[in-house]
Length: 195
Image 1 (cartoon, one colour):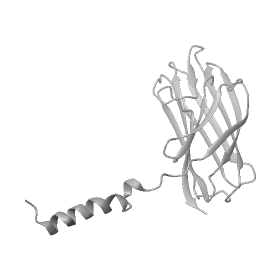
Image 2 (cartoon, helix red, strand yellow):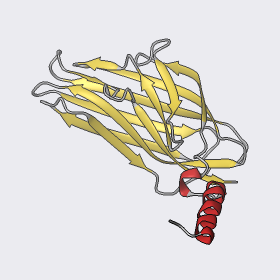
Image 3 (cartoon, helix red, strand yellow):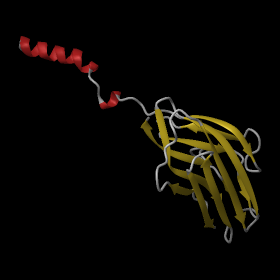
Image 4 (spheres, helix red, strand yellow):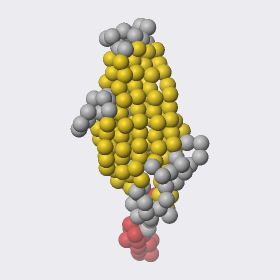
């Protein structure tokens, strides 16, 4: 059996323990707020785009549900998204990832060109990548920031992203700007800091 003093210490610890902060009780990362202001182009017909933050606040993703290109053709989409951080926080984009599902036959190829920028901010990102067939494996491109540029506090910005996807070669070859497993097309990874 436990002695009285030892039992009292254990009881006090049990009562005080839940009041002490722990790593598991740390505040979650802030969540960015997104609103699609417009989407224009053959790669994004009406009601085929979406923008969502991820659950832990470390990124947000864009989805194109009709951005599939077949051989000897191309599609383009320019999206504008209003991006806002919660009060007291600011963010920087650390990298931009594009995910393409190809179905390329022999002697076919796909090319993805991406440009992204915030209106009124010096931040920009770009990618210009190609793959050759035969290829049916998920294709991922990434643009990393050389320098983190944090958005001014308490301001919303419009993010502009312009994607062009081309497929050359066999007419039955195709590529889709979408990871069919995760349903994400373009992912913006974020770094947060308090204002």
